[in-house]
Length: 405
Image 1: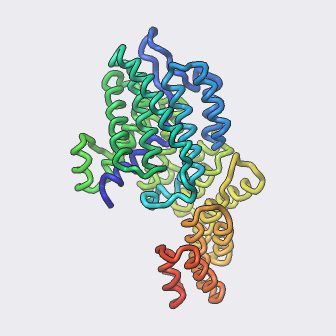
Image 2: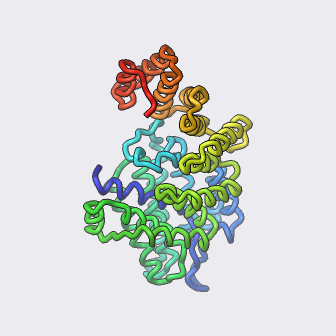
Image 3: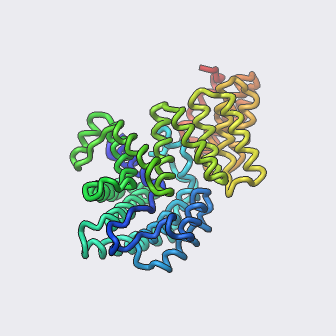
């Protein structure tokens, strides 16, 4: 894998939703519109973090109309538009980001060209508003921060949605430089540490050749410092940025196998955003990764029950269903695991997940010595996409039954 792609992909995770916050730098400078000083923005972020993007965008647009010269208000709309599209195309399941499969994963849904145009328009508008303030005062920390957010969000869309790696990397690096300048001017501007902390952790995690490549564009790394920065954000930033910090920090803690700390963070997010099924699913993912198999099974089943009772703002049942299959498999409950995989495979529009679930169901039926049922699943995998790695495995298992490793 090319180092710049790995570096960029994790960097944009620092922009999971970093669309707001900041401290006004003086009594005469414009006061940024934030959730702590604007009811519509506060309501918009509640919708945002509960995956109710249409409602969120409406609230953010109302604030933008009331504050047409505020780049923060435009950034909020931009974040809503981008993350609604990322959610629609299936790019927000944190389970994928715990490994590196998202680097090459194809989106189950095509991108909406109207969203591309809107992202371009809103990005240009936000950048122009920030630049207008910087033209008056190059050391305006709020304007620098807002410009960095716009660049980071644009990088997120170009990378996670369009897979335009080089263009996204340039924008992401510019975002970090903006926020580094913010901290030079105001070391107490904690919100700026989210993107920088994410970047520090990522570069610190890279192989030596990749670190050298990052250093060429002036980017350094330090895993420990990056995690410390993110912890500062969680503890001291404005509410919406603190939530972003929790998302990113929990993801990195999982990669570091610091499960207790990650579980505490995600449990708090579950309580704060009870209509978000992805957060609930992430709690179950973490339980399973931490080796708490039975607790994970209970957590997944709770998510599935919530999906069926419409407890969440929206739910893609195939995500917790597949996770349940994995947890049951780990506990050698093969029949129930097969049923969970079958449930996952029968829902949603993600062909890659459907193939994985169908293949896994076949493996479970092999372990149960139900060879005919297993062969049927393997044939289905091949019909779904005969060129995939899953299809290669299915062909192998058709010749030789799967055995538990």
